[in-house]
Image (cartoon, rainbow, N blue to C red; front, side, top):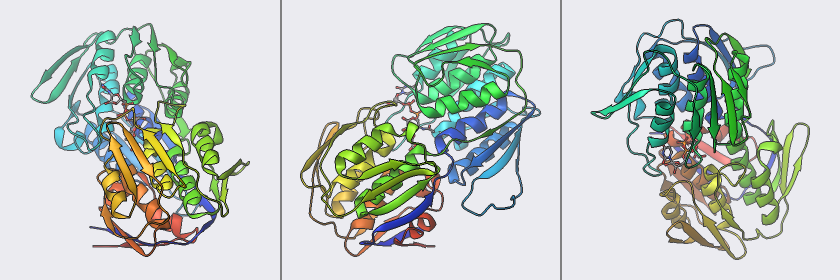
Length: 429
Ligand code: EPU
C-alpha cells in the first residue's frame, strides 16, 4: 500500500494547478444516464473515485471513452471523456459497487426517471457518520415513485414515469438535491425544490442539464424550479474547478508561509474560506488567473469557525482548518454541524503534537509552537489531507499511510505540492 513521506519545514512558493471538482464530476458523470446521446465532459480530474464511477456506470451500459491529449496539454490538465448510455442494460446497482462510494447511490434518480425502475443497494456505513438516504426516498416518492426497501436494496418503480411535484427538504442535502434535479428533469410537469442545497456543484450540474435540454431555473439558490421535458440529448460541459482542493492548498500555504497562486481557482465559490484565511493572517488576492495566497512571517491567529451548508464554511475543509490552527497563537474553536462523526483526524493530529480537545461537536484547538513529524493514517480523504498539511509544517519526517484515501480526491498531490517546493514523495508498495 502506498504511503506519502514528507519532511516538513519548507515554505511553499509558486503556482499550483487546481483540478476539476470531484464533487461536480461525479454527479455530472451520473447525468449521462439520462440520455441515449453522448455527454462530453472536459476538465475531469484523474481520481480514484472517478475511475470507480466509470466502472459503476459501465455496469449499467454506459460506454466511456477518454479523448486523446490535445496540443499544449500536460499531465496536470484534466481529462476529456465521452459518456454514452445508448441502452441501459441493467438498472441494478449492486452492493459491492455502491458500498465503495456513497455517491454511486445517486444513479437511482436518472435510472428511475429514464427506465421507470431502479434497484440500488443502500450505501452502508461510512467513516464520517451514518449518512442515511431518507431524503432521497421522500423526494422520489413525491415525484410519484413507489419505493420498497428489501434486503439492503432500495427498489424504486414508476412504470408510468415520474410527475412534477413540490419537494421540501427538511435539511440541506447535496446528494438528494442532485438526485431530485436529475429525476425532475424527465418528470411530467413542473417541480419545485425548496430548501435545496446551494453548493456551486449543484449549479454546475444544472448548467450541464440545461445544455442537455432540461429547463431548470434557480440552481445555486434554495428554490429550484424544473419544468420536465420528454427527453434530454447530447451536450459538452467543463467541470468547475475544485473549491475544496483549492481551499486545501490555500490552507497549506498559510500553514507553511510562502506565496502560492492557485491556478484556475474561483473566488466566488470560496468566499467563506477566504475570509477565514484573512482572519488567520494570510493575504488572499483573487486575480484573473486564480487566487494568490501569501503569508510572510507573522503568527497564525486563532479562529472560531462553524461548518455550514454553502455559502458557509464547508465541512470538507474542516480537518484542513484544524491542522492549520493547531499552530495558531491561541485557542480556536471548530464546530462541525454537517456530519456527527467527522473528527477522525483529531487523534492523528495529536500524534504530531497538536493539542485538541473534543467536546461533542466542538473541537477546541490549543495552538502549539511546533509540530513534530510522526507516522499517521486516516480513514477519509479530507482527514488524510489534513495530516499532509500538518506534516508540511512539522519538524522532521511524517509518513501518511493509506494513501488511497488521498487518491480518491486529490490528483497527484505529491507532484503538486512538490512543485511548490515541499519535500514530499510517494513510497510505493
Ligand atoms: N442526510 C440525511 N438523509 C439523507 C441524506 C443526507 O440525514 O437522505 C444528512 C447527512 O447524514 C448529513 C447531511 O444530511 O448529515 C448532509 O449530507 P449531504 O446529503 O449534503 O451529503 P452528501 O451528498 O452525502 C456531499 C459531498 C460530501 C460533502 C457533503 C456536504 C459529494 C460526492 N459528497 O455529500 O463530500 O461533505 O455533500 O457538503 O458531493 C468529500 O468530498 O470528502 C465529501 C464527503
